[in-house]
Length: 503
Image (cartoon, rainbow, N blue to C red; front, side, top):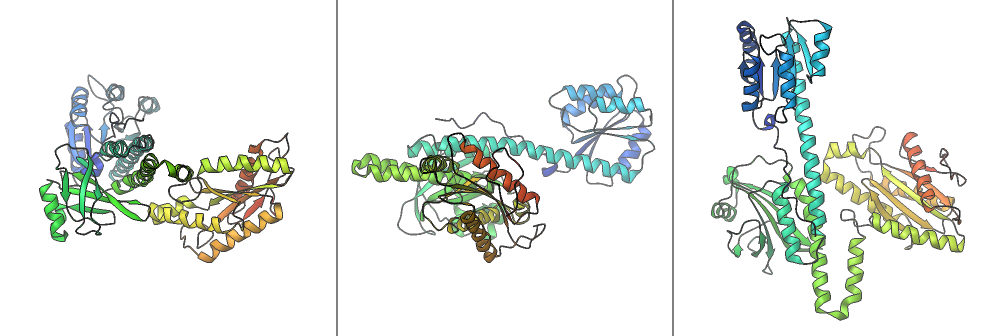
């Protein structure tokens, strides 16, 4: 079983997000320091000053500024040596350094960048230009720190999901989720509470199933909502009295609640608590995929327990477990594993019967733009709708529809030639067009569209199954290159990857 990544350290959010950026100004000339103090004092930046190279190193270590303005020519330790030492120290290596100097010699410019500087401004400088450069590099630093933090979070999230599915024991599953969320969201306390009474919230009775803190009472009673909700003592005038009392009794300043469902039935609530006031960010978005996988894992654990209790239900339970393992958690259609299995089976059958087999790859056009415009919740909703449309397009129950990955889907149509495949592609686009889903960031259409790549073959012993998928992928690529919102059919003789043609 995978152990939650409790040893992983998520980089702290950039100070730029919590307080005004701190700039360290280094110059051995007092007049220059006064000029920069006067200029930067008109901004919201916090300032620190150093008049020598050694003093700059000490203050950089102590205060860890967000940016350093560094004079090149200084007695004793010059700016190049200061820059070199800062870049050699892991604690200061990522601080952007802008050289601010009267030297215009090209060798000095080259040396500055070789030592790791991000910019070089010569004196006398233009005030507006310097301020713009400072802001640009502060923004770039913040973007880089966000990307690093997101990468660590995604790796922890991946490990948590793997850990959740590493057991069929409910208690172990919940403990895995608790430990992972505790690390991922840097929470003070994480609880999972199961719904006990037959009444819907508010007023429901609850029992704590597991917690990241052992200092909690075994049974709790409180009101909770069926939707994800942020609670905060800062909004006390808007809180339900029961919620306000709950936060007070648990010594919680902020709490994120997320409901847990078993299919259509309300099962319980995930509580993520902080003992200090909090500015809510993307916590709900990070918790959502864990809750989705947790719901599947709880369902699997319940099924497994039924299997142990009732041997006579073995076949039904195994079928349901298999279905869940082959199901895409978001769109509720087949996942990549399901596709791989079904495609191999259909390939073998078509090979035996010498019948045509078609693969259609479909990709949502400009989906990244859609997510950026409408948000990931609407993006998830869009993918669900696309999956529903694809599921309705084929006429036969034997046809396979699955999520191939991200915003890409795949269809496997047995005993289907190019004409039949074209009818399915047209039906997909017609059904989607009828829905008229708005997409204002689409570059050529006011609504959501889809591109499709079609490949058909009668399998032979000399062919490899991946040839057919590769041809469909090339056809999809050509559809994208030709303007999207269309389908392309790869020539049946195109086993070497020649350019797809439009039908």
